[in-house]
Length: 385
Image (cartoon, rainbow, N blue to C red; front, side):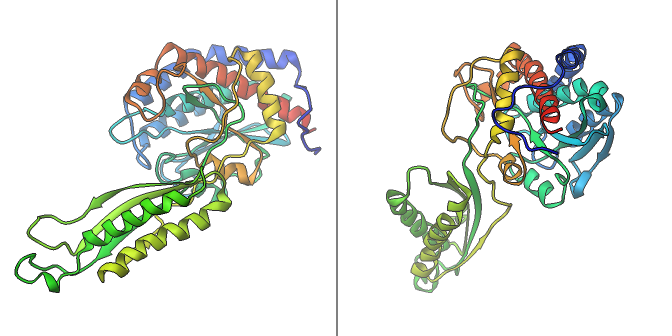
């Protein structure tokens, strides 16, 4: 099987590609209904039982063999159809944000992914494709795709793709690498006026660490970020707190930088413990999210097909946001284009974006994104023969 070159043209049979588009359009009503159904019933990370089952039901109805609870994750699924020599995975997300619902538009991602899969279904063998649809939970928190990758979900896959709604159209998407850190200080409780000298103030330890982090930021490279929240630091002002906790995130433009940044940040938290006589426990609650790296050959096919499907001219952009699809892109050829649904009026993780995720612009992105992904999969298979 020959490798794909970035200069390869779109090479699948034009008649077959038109038939694929017609199948997507034939399923448009089902896809938009699925998008609205998921949107109306938001489920957060690892709790997406209804969304996963609704996606699985639609795929089964159109010939896919679906494995629910796939690869050890109860709200993941793995669907397969076709017997071609080239395997392409379309990745679906469907988790929502706590308190904001689908303010990241994952209902749209799921519907577009299923649209591509249904468009390809009747033609997969003629196109030389085995189509996989991987339902990936917990993108917002939990790194579901990293867990799936570690469990072997992408073994045998030659290329993976998905689309994501955004306030701008970008083909060559770049993301930050992301690491998470849970912090727990343990001190010694005491009365603040009777015996303060016997106390070890865990809240003070966290304060020292936050001051150290604030000073550290002055010397960090431009694309390194440190941010977080205090989740507990005492229960009453007349008691020296013996426990304090925090959740922090670190971001860098490349995965290779996370180790150095993590070491420097953890030293700041250790400084808080040292200064106050407390103990500190530092944990990594989930896998790191790696930076996303588009495959040049696959991206060239997407650009041509997105334009032909009616998408706006994409703009170039530096890294923004984070996604566990970055982990997939480090393991195999992948693309993650973002589709404009707001014209810059609002962006993900804003309440207004949840409304935009079921707008006419979102509906257009579902259909056009599905067509462009299906065409890109078809061209990729033809170019790999």
